[in-house]
Length: 289
Image 1 (cartoon, rainbow, N blue to C red):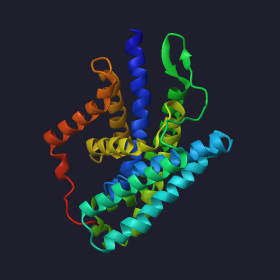
Image 2 (image 1 turned 90 degrees about the horizontal axis):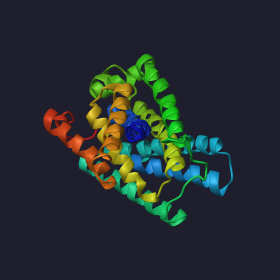
Image 3 (image 1 turned 30 degrees about the vertical axis):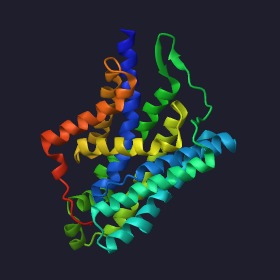
C-alpha cells in the first residue's frame, strides 16, 4: 500500500512539473505554431541563474527565482524578436526554424557547460520526507503548490482577459486576426516572453528537488512538446491535466519497468496519440506565419 501511495505522490509532483513545461510551451506554440525547442535553453538558463545567484552569490532563493523569471522572459522575447521574426520575414520553412531553434539549444547548453561545468548541481536547500512512512518530500510538495499557483491564475487570465482572447484569435487564424487589426507581431512577442517567464519556476523546482545538468534542456523541450501535442489545443487547464497524466504514467511505469524506461513510456503515449488521432496533421508544414 505504501508503494502505491508513494507512486501516486511521485506522479503528482512529476506531473505538476510536466504541467508547467507543457503550459509554458503551449503559450508559445498556440499563437505562433513554432516548435520552439530552444524552450529547453530557456529552462537551462533559468536553472543556472537560480543556481548561480543562490549557491555562488549567496542570495535568498526567492530573489534568485524572481531574477530567473525576468531573465527567462527576456531571453524568450529575444528569441522571437531576434531570431524567429527575422526568419519569418524571409519566409523560412518550418525545417529551417526547427534547425535554428535546436542550434540555439545546443549553443546555450555548451556555454553553460563551459561556465559551470558538466556535473550535476543543486541548490543545497534541504530536501527531506514529510512523513516517516512516505517518501514524499518538502521539495515535491513545493513543486505541486508552486506549479498550480502559477497555472490556475494563468488559466483564468487566458480565459477571461482581452489578451487571452487575442492570443486565441491569433492561434485560430493569423490572417483573420490581422484583418481585425490585432497586432500579431506584438502577440507573438508577449507570448514568448510570458511562456518563457513561467518556465523559470519549473527550473527552480527541478534544481531544488533533484538537481540539474547543462544538458537537461533537450529533455525539457521534448516533454513540453509531448504534453502540448497530446493536449491538442485544450487550453491551459487541459494542457496541465495532460502533464499530470503523463507524470502519473511515468511514475506508475516504475512499478513495472526499470527506471530508465520512464521517458520511453511518455513518448510511447505520444506516438499512440499521434497515430490514432492524426494529431500531426493539425498543423500544416508550410511556411512560418
